[in-house]
Amino acid sequence: MPWVLSVLGLVILLLAGDALVKGAVNLSLRLGVPALIVSLTIVAFGTSAPELLVSIKAVLDNAPGIALGNVVGSNTANILLVLGVPALLATMHTSECNTRKTFNMMIIASLLFIALAMRGVFDLWAGFILLGALAFVLFDMYRDSRKHRHACKGADVGDLDEPEGADPDMPGWRIAVFLVLGLVGLPLGAGLLVDNASIIARAYGVSDTVIGLTLVAIGTSMPELATTVMAALRRQADIALGNVIGSNLFNLLGIIGVASLVGPITVDPEFLRIDLWVMLGASLMLIPFVYLRRDITRLWGILLCAIYAGYMAAILL
Image 1 (cartoon, rainbow, N blue to C red):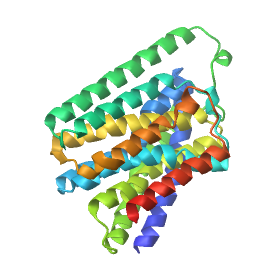
Image 2 (cartoon, rainbow, N blue to C red; image 1 turned 135 degrees about the horizontal axis):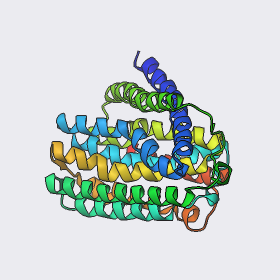
Image 3 (cartoon, rainbow, N blue to C red; image 1 turned 90 degrees about the horizontal axis):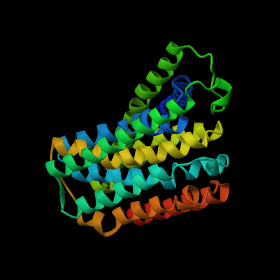
């Protein structure tokens, strides 16, 4: 039964990811906001809901290894796996995307996260600092959104950037249905996948920390993977890359920030020795796509997936 429920969770994730992408790109068109900004907020935060739910539950269950491993492992998986797998299916034309500002924010957030982790525990103070940084990021995104709408005010609809596959005539209720289906379906599917995968893993005597870094991290990254695969197939590279960067930002600042208010999260020394630096190194691998405007080709997809497979092997062996 756990295997059947895991497959069912994966199917729900794929369908919900497609619904969320449809809703997000059409909402951006309706509001006159770039698809990139919508992906950095609604899509990114919606697909991070499973990580938030899992981390809070882990803290309440006194399993800090799952809470922290979930976030660190998910951020690593988001870049190496979530961008690598779609690139195997279709080249993502990220050279057309301008994500420098949000990428810089993600790197700063990663360094802040590592600095706080060196204290040995994420407590109330760490939570307030992380949530304060998240508030700044959200305000900056809101300001950019307003600037864009002001610049486009009075322009013809045809002059605005219209995401491919968007329907200018889609009624508001359909957009709302797509968004609700995506935001509800993603955590539901992830919950089925993670819970049953954890049952299977524990049957083999795997530790909480390893479960957090592997099965739970991969499971809670499935919404990002589902959303990014659908975005790549629809040639929505801005949704794909923006979703990953936005999700990583929210994972670092929002999820551990909120979870730290629920209870202290002790940091296993192994995180400081290896896993946090792997996460940072994976984040820096986005530099060619962000600053050099390279497309994520199939060759890049193979490289990213191979690095992630090697990391998983190092953890499990």
